[in-house]
Image 1 (spheres, rainbow, N blue to C red):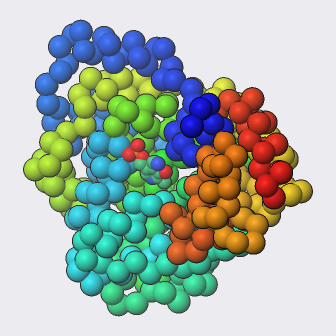
Image 2 (image 1 turned 60 degrees about the horizontal axis):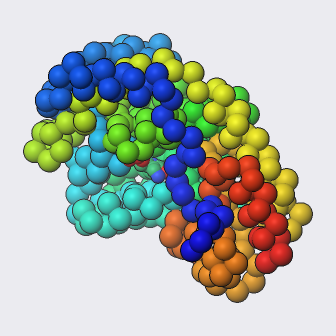
Image 3 (image 1 turned 90 degrees about the horizontal axis):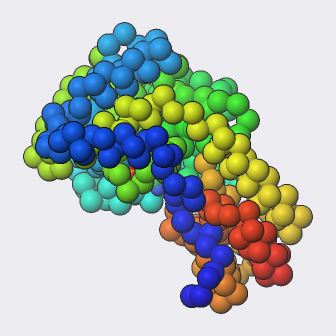
Amino acid sequence: MKDPVNFSIGQPDFDVPEPLKEEAIKAIKAGQNKYSQTAGDSLLQGRIAEQIKSEFGWTNPAILVTSGVSGALLLAFMALVNPGDEVIIPDPYFVMYKHLVNMLGGKCIFVDSYPTFELPLEKISRAITSKTKMIILNSPCNPTGVVYSEEQIKALARIAAEKDVLVITDEIYEKFCYEGRCPSIANYYRKILLLRGFSKSYAMSGWRLGFAAADESLKDVIEQMTKIQQYTFVCAPTPFQKAAIAALDYDVSDFVAAYRKKRDLIYEGLKDRFELVKPGGAFYAFVKAPAGGATKFAEKAIANNVLVIPGNVFSEKDTHFRISYATSDDKIEQGIKILRKLA
Ligand code: PMP
């Protein structure tokens, strides 16, 4: 396609901030090009641990630096999911979860969160059985952009605690929060694996950096994940780990402010023609397709030069389509005009 409006991309449209690029270049020139420890560069690991301690009050968190949150997810699922285990996943969901569970012989238990995309607490509670291995939490959520409220997160923590179930919280979009900070379950529950990354916050998706953090009581999970990393990826890219130390202190509030404006553009531009929930975070909107389904609508949009992703990629349903508004304001305006005509 020639110069399409590309609403399909799952990464920011800005580049890595210059000072962070400089840190990576400095590390490469200084010869920091060999393997790091499997668990991660010790300075980076220490800095992440400090941040987690001060944010959540954990005393001695275990940290593993991974090749992106994708790496952390693969290692976590490999360490935890045995054949027949059930994994509870709010639907719609980030694509990887389903395929990892299936690959490992586990069983996905989808809990429908349509049409508000709030946490389906009742359904989650009812879905827990003796075979439940874990619940997946992703806020801000890909593909809906929904940020779960403090009350919902607390309620989930209560449900999980009652049944003693592990929660994996994928917080890769935690910086992209447009109404204050995103509540984290790490404040309310210790039996969690917290996953965060650098791909979205600092636009370094090609640098492949993320981490997993757990309370001391779950150190063994991090140790098993570290063992698998040792025999697979070995470690995350060393010079970029050095640059990530500086990223931890880098202020991205200007980027977030720009993305809040983009969120407003999309929401205001579509809300009278389409059914959509106002996204509170990430850079996605999950919009109800007109009658005929999302795949048909996506085909029609593509024929009109706008790339969107049909909902069945992220869901057991095909009623909605995902817009990523991580593109220029001009392209967003163009895309809104075209989509409105197709409504
Ligand atoms: N989790 C979610 C919810 C995502 O949207 C993504 C990227 N699309 C990832 C994890 C993986 O990101 P990365 O491996 O680049 O850290």
